[in-house]
Image 1: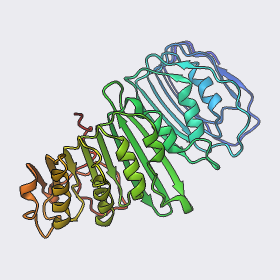
Image 2 (image 1 turned 90 degrees about the vertical axis):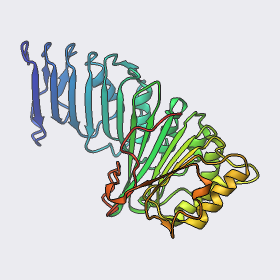
Image 3 (image 1 turned 180 degrees about the vertical axis):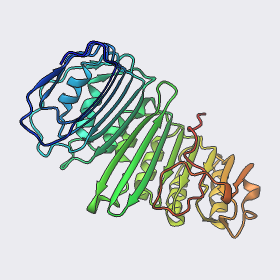
Image 4 (image 1 turned 60 degrees about the vertical axis):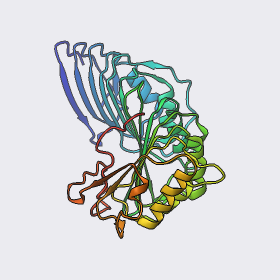
Length: 352
């Protein structure tokens, strides 16, 4: 199929007619291409001028995605959706490294974790590119989601983890920001018995990192031992932001009081807006940090959420910020929480 003057093309080949003959698309001046359907009968020649590519297909393997991307070297914006991941894992051929030197935005949805990890290992893209991935758990997992996220932690300055639950499916979103590269977002969907499993921190804490900001947005938190282990390694943290249930918040405070030496010695700011807590418990925490020479400098809360009030601890914190609950702006997509009064996620994490 020769289309020498075409600049934009939208193809929907999602029907079930398997008698279609194979065909090749040759459109050297194509700038924007959207394709929906099976790839069995389509062969692409290099699109030297293509800058925007949207693909929605089925049962794609990693090597097929890389092969497609190798045909579009000038690509700037790419959105790939794998509607139905393969049910069988075939022997993977040796994969080439694909260079996309002008890429500004890449979104890939529908690959299992190990396939997504393999894809990223074989892509050479600018640090300025925004990367967004939505993945599913392997069974059994060849690569865990925590190990996948950990590969990006070395250069990260901010790590955000949010948890969303709908019926029997859960979605965990990891967002990483840094000085050296653009934002990376990784989402994982789980269902059935795995839906309520909050990701643990052990694998994340094994990776050397210099993150200064940690954001947790979930009604549940990791188990206490995982919190202590991870926070014990993340010694450069200066800011922690958390929205959670009051009983779960207690686990975080206990972790930050871990003996014999307090962890996160550089912690200056705690944002627990949207989270209810006991003022007596907060007083104990602030006094503990002060007594051990690592006092908290700033506490950000929602007005009226300290029970009964802030009087018990206000003298222990140099800066106390109280957000109006009616003006709160939650930046996370959490339809399972009827009213979230936090002020987290609506801006990029600040760096110290």
